[in-house]
Structure formats: structure tokens, C-alpha cells
Length: 257
Figure 1 (cartoon, helix red, strand yellow):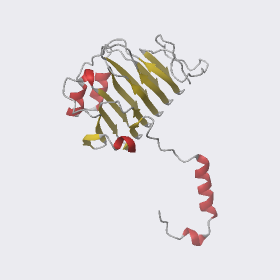
Figure 2 (cartoon, helix red, strand yellow; figure 1 turned 45 degrees about the vertical axis):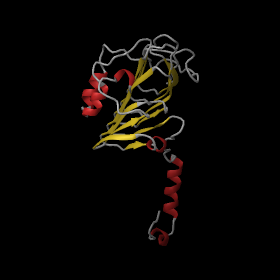
Figure 3 (tube, rainbow, N blue to C red; figure 1 turned 90 degrees about the vertical axis):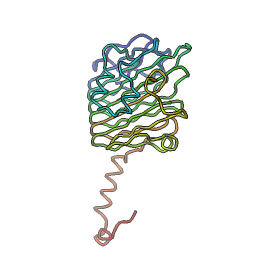
Figure 4 (cartoon, rainbow, N blue to C red; figure 1 turned 120 degrees about the vertical axis):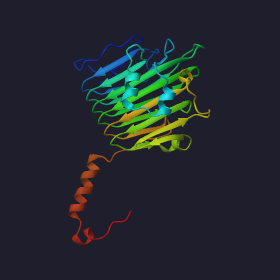
């Protein structure tokens, strides 16, 4: 299902609503965006401007450095008292959102973005972040892949983890990011030219946590890194037919790559 957003808060989506066209980006900045589907995909582009500073209940930098469990982190980020700038949620559908975080005020404010799906893939493309804006991102899928693309102005910590899938830092970002922590299938990457964030700097440090139980997770730069494409179904079928039609002498030859 495709969703578009007027400046006001968006109610939960129903699968019975008609499909709507999506503009390149929302005409006006939105805040408190909330989109939910059961089976349909969520696809669109939105401009987000947090209207007021957001202060998490727990210090995010300390949570990264201490290596607290993902379940504890999710509960801390899911506080009912903490307003969210954008929420995308689907039970069975995929989520693909392009986002810009903008604002004209001189006071620093935080955009908190959450995306989660039980069975679908999640792709968040954070195109830009203006000065005096900070982002906190939490993206999760139970069975699908999770991909986060950030601009080079992103300055802070990103944690990638997957219980049963691959963890991948895409080439452009890998060339400039600094890995500061590795544990099993969990990687914490520091982005930006600044020093290591210190405890108590949540209001000025970008943070992101992307994780999946059974799918791969990927991190890259927006507009630079490309996602690996899966072979098309027809290509798989053709390869299978060629193998069946190949002479027996050819089948016995060793394969080299």
C-alpha cells in the first residue's frame, strides 16, 4: 500500500483504503507521522522537522558502549512518554521510506524515527540532515532484511546486528567509517570526523540501531552505495535448464570461479 502525508498527523492505515500516489517528498514537513499496515507495503518520501527537542529516557551513547542487550534497548526506545517524529510499522509488508530531516530554527532538536516489520524487508534512505538537527533511528525486521542509508553529514554511532543473517557495511561507507566494537554478529560503527561521542551527548549525537532475527542487515551512504540485487527468477530458471541440458562429460568437469 502506498501512503502520502499531509502536514498533520497521519492516522493508522487500513488495508481497505484505496491506493494513493506518492509525491517525491511531502509538500510540507511533518512531525508525529504514524503509518501502519497489516499486509500492504509502505512506500513513500517524507520531509521531517521535529517541532520540539526530544530527550531519550536513557543515554544512548552509554547504551552503545556498554553493549546492553537489544531487548533492553528496544524497551528504552519504546517509551510511551517519548514522542516519535516518524513511525512505520507493518505486520507482513515491506517498508521503503526516503526521508529528509530539515528545519529552520536555531535550537537543536531531535528526529526519532522507527520502522519495523515482522516478515517484510525494511529500507530507510535518509537523504539529508540539516545543521542543528539530530536523528535517532531504530529499524527492525523479524524475518526480512534491514537496510539503512545515511548522508555523509550523519555524525555518530550505528549498531548493526542480526541473529541469523549477515551483517554488511557497504563499500563507500566502509572506506570512511570506524568500527569501534564487534561482538558475535554485532558491529558498532562510528561515522563523522569528530571524536568519540562522550556519555551525556545524546542531544548532539546521531544514533541508529538496525537489527533482524533472520535476515541480513546493511549500512551504506545515501546516493553512493547500491544494494546488491538478487538474481531474477527467470535467470534462475534458465541456469537450471542449461544445467539439465548440458552433456554428461561437461557435468563431470570441475567448476572454477
